Length: 477
Ligand code: FAD
Ligand code: AMP
Image (cartoon, rainbow, N blue to C red; front, side):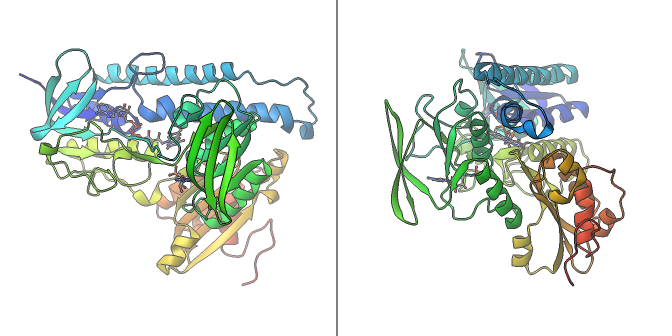
């Protein structure tokens, strides 16, 4: 005899826990299976995002930014501080406290919404039977009318640089160092590599980033990417493009890395290494061959536009399926699936999902890049406004970067917004809302923005798309 639910969710990351809460809100008898054990040895909800991803990385980015400002950034405001010191152990403890508060919060939300947390590793069997193993006795079986798979993703490991103790680590290890390495190598100049490289650079490490591709941030509008590369380089991040790491050796003096670049074989000696070469879907104990769940060659669970798998009543969301590996994308898929199970016709607009790299400056974007528009042969117009011309950015002494607006040449529909600059993670919401409403650059140009704010740069970029910016000279038609 097995317990029966309306919905069982496998995984309680931002995709799974949100799906479970929304199912319960809609009156469905819901359970969520989660196996996570945190570094204090306690079972925890929240997945990668809350435990070792979005939240702890942002906590350390914030602490290290405050430290760097106090140590080097306040003189221009007429503030002199001496003896500024970073207590790394306290920084890590503060980060851990934030994580515990938030993961504990999800547990409260589960209780309040009557979601049952089944602790252990769940595996999907035929006929929506879920077997859960908690390493403590016999596996327990449950059945459900609907199963939502949300087991997320894991760091990719590479044979050339195997993880080793706290010397060669993945992103999780790099969130727990209690001392600053004198010389650090980050392998991979993706979102996670740049964020963690920035944390340790600000705290005093010499940082070299080795990136196999020749193009910096290929998914980002290249005007924005090039500007950000200049700013990162000025901060002392030594980003080497076209540099593929091929092997490594660890000894008492640190790590020796071999890599190839345009000039041939190179060698680099560092104290510690962060391997940040991407993430892969977590399908390790997800199912069995006889269940016949369709999984593609990249390990992603195959789904249609509504997150339905090939099996009736089995859905999949979040990092486990196609699309950007972002917490908010997974959460919104969770809401859509819960509502579809409850008979509603919800959908998610994949064209208007914002992406952010939380470095300083932050890089934020939504919609298409100029390169994508060119490739698609779409006729477009573009408007750019630099923060150097923004009164608020000047007052903050933070004038790096720009806003770029891309709109259809004929209909003026907003096709993309790309920002590199301080606080751009908050600014990009303007672009997302306009895209959701299928608005135009003229809609932004006619909107009143408060003065003086950073958001005025969005207004001016929209005006610039029509050659009528007020605070910079306009390009000739
Ligand atoms: P996950 O969060 O990975 O959760 C999956 C859960 O399923 C885990 O808790 C796992 O224990 C559980 N699980 C797996 N298999 C089983 C099983 N068989 N049975 C039971 N439970 C199982 N994204 C952003 O949007 N913004 C950011 O700022 C950001 N920063 C990041 C920083 C870092 C360092 C990292 C590593 C990632 C970051 N991400 C960020 C990505 C983000 O964390 C993921 O996109 C997000 O967590 C995906 O959510 P998910 O629910 O699909 O999976
Ligand atoms: P992301 O997938 O955005 O996290 O980025 C990971 C980055 O790591 C990609 O840009 C890859 O090109 C890069 N990468 C993967 N393997 C290697 C390697 N062996 N050496 C250097 N860079 C790598």
